[in-house]
Amino acid sequence: EILIGLVGSEMCIRDRYGFHDVRCSEQVYAWIEMDYATGDWVLLAQELENGVLVGEPVELDDGTTDWEPARFTVTGNSVIWQKMPFASGAKRAEYSHCYLWSVGSPKGKDLYESPGRFATWPRVSDGYLTIAPRVNASEGTFYGLTALDLQNNNKVAAQLVMPETVSPFEAVYMGSSFCLLYTSPSPRDRSVS
Image: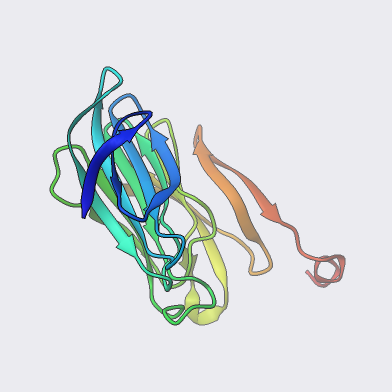
């Protein structure tokens, strides 16, 4: 049950839950509340207008100990998040999803499905969402840096498939190019390629 209380300014919090992560833009405030005793979590969002919360919070997603707390970002009046299973949990074979919710919508929209965990957090720059889903799953563990055009019906604007030995750590699409940080292969792996 959601309780109304004061946490700095007026904010909704769940009994037994604590703040896990918070993000905001000028138009939306989003946060994860977590029951650290059980590992259950919930992602919530609320409209923000002139620095004041407006209306009631909307529950966007939730998870149990089988699901990693959502990786999320905010942009304009939208919240974008990834829901994926823990790598070693009971749901590890489940697909991961990237969702988008905008203020006024009753629920989020599924933007992208990954046949495995996403490698990076969702990042937005200049109207493009960058994600790193698994691709070519039948051939091995490959990540595809993917830019979705948020101003053009979320269409794929670019995708760059990384070599199997490269796992991106951070990525963002800027000025028609990907900028990324990645874990480099070991010296032995570099000599083989």
